Amino acid sequence: MKDTKKHPSIFEPFALIFNIVTSIIGAIIGMQIITTLGVTPSTSIVGALVAMLVARIPGAMFKKYKSIHRQNLVQTSISSATFGAANSLLIPIGIPFVMGNTKLIIPMLIGAALAMFVDAAILYKIFDSRLFPASETWAPGVATAQSILAGDKGGKRAALLGVGTAIGIIGSYFNISMSAFGTAFIGNIWALSMFGIGLMIRQYSIPWFNFDINQHYIAHGFMIGAGIVALIQVSFLIFGKQKKSNQKQAKATENLDESRLTRPIKEARRALGYGFIAYLVIALLIAITGGIITKMSPGMFIGFLLFAAFAAFVHELIVGIAAMHSGWFPAFAVAFITLLFGMLIGFPPVALALLAGFSAATGPAFADMGYDLKTGYILRGNGEDKEYELQGRKQQYITGMISFGVALLTVLITYKSYFAQNLVPPIDAVYVSTIKAGASPEVAKQLLFWAIPGAIIQLIGGPGKQLGVLFATGLLILSPNACWAVLLGILIRIVVLKVKGKEAEAPMSILAAGFIAGDALFNFFNSMFKIRK
Image 1 (cartoon, rainbow, N blue to C red):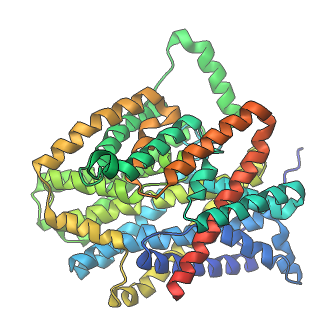
Image 2 (cartoon, helix red, strand yellow; image 1 turned 180 degrees about the vertical axis):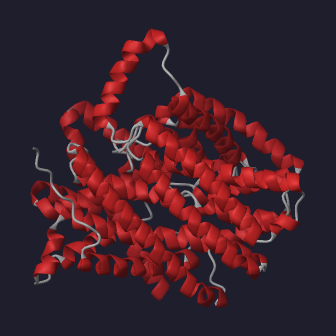
Image 3 (spheres, rainbow, N blue to C red; image 1 turned 90 degrees about the vertical axis):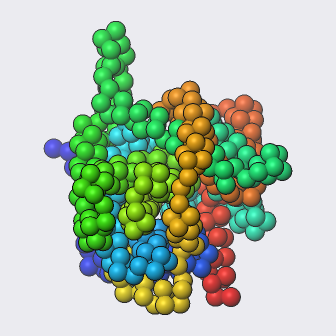
C-alpha cells in the first residue's frame, strides 16, 4: 500500500488562532485602504513574510512554520480576509449608505456575504478543470509561491528573486507598474499583448482621439461583446461534445486532461449549476429583505431575480478569466456594466442599488482564491501527487472560508464607525451617481455598437487566448504607463527566449515573480504610509 503525505491542517490549535489573528489584520487593512485610497492591496506576500518570520521565533510551535505548506495557509488567510472585507463586503454595503437608504445595509451585507462564500466555493470546485486550469498564469499566485520557495531553499533561486524584488520596488517607486511588467514574462503572449494594447488605448485616448473612451462607454461595450462570446465559449467547453471524426483526438485530449487535471468537467458542470441556483436564492433573499418585492410588478420581480443571478454568475466568470490570464481583475467595471444593463431594463433605483452591490460581491473572492490555490499548487509540486494536491487545496479552501467569516464579523463590528466618518469606498459614489443620472437610449446604442468588435476579437482568439476579454480589461483600467511595462516585458521575453532558448524560462519566471512581489510590497507599505500620514 502506498504511503501518502499528510498536509498540515488549519485546525491545529495554534494554526487556527494564528490564522484568525492574521485574518483580522488583513480585514482591517483591506477596509482601511479601500476607503481611503480606493484600492485593495495584495497581502499574500506580506502574509508569507510574516509566517517566515514566525518560523524564526524559538519554540517548537513556531518552528513548524518553516513548513512551506503552513506558510501557504497563512498567506491564504490574510489574502482572503483582505479582499473579502474590502471588495466583497464593504463596497456592496457602501452603496445603500451613499444613497441615503441605511435600512438596506444589513440586507445587502447578508446577501453580499452569502455571495462571497458561494463565489469562493464555485472557484474551489472548478479550479484545475478545463475551465480554469491550475497550469494557467494566475501571476500573483506564482509570485507568492516563488517567494515562499526562495525563503525555503535559498541559493540561486533566492538571489534571483531578491534581485527581481529590488527591481520591482525601485520600478514601483518611479510609478512603473512592475506587476504588469512581471506578468508579461509569465502569461500567454497573445492575451497579454491585447491587454497591453487595451491599456495603451485607454491611457492615450484623449491625446490620440480627443475623447475619453471610458466616458463614451466604448470600453464597456467591448467587454459586453467579448463577455457574451466568452460565456458561449465556456458553455461549449462545459456542454460541447467532440465530433465523431475527431474521436481519436478527443480521446487523446481526454487522456491528457485526465493525467493533468484534478477536476473532471462533470464536477465543474455540477458546481456551476448549483452555483447559479445559489445565486438565484440569494437574489430572492436580498429582494425580500430589501423590500423591493413591493416596488415591482410580479413579472419584473421575476425578471430581476433571473437577471441578478445571471449577472452575478457571468461577473465572476469574466473577472476570473481576466484574473487568470492577466493578474488584474476589472471587478468594479464589470459590476458597472451590470448596473447599466439593469438601468436599461428599467429596474427601480432601490433594486439597482441592490443589484450593483450583489454583482460587486462576486468576482473578487473567486479571483483571489484562484491566486491562493495557484500558490499552493506550485508549492505542492504542480499536481504531481494528486492526492496530496487535493488534500492541500481542501485545507486552503477551509482556511479561506474561515477568513471570509472573520472578514464578515470584522465588517459587521466596524462598518458603522467607518460610515460615521463618511469613509466609504470611492467606487460607491460612481455607482450611486450613475443610478441617479439614469440611462438613455444613446447609452444603449453605444454599448451595442462597441459590443460588436469586442465579440469579433474574442471569437478570433478562441477560449484559450481570451483576446477580447483581455483587450476589454485593458480598456477598462487606467494605470499610467502600465501598457509600456506589459509590451516591453513581452518584447524582452521574446528576445531572451530567441537567444537563450527554453532554458531561460525558469530564471525569467523567478525574476518576474520578484518584480510582482516588489510591486506588491511597495504598494502595500506605501498605502500604509499614506494612511498614517
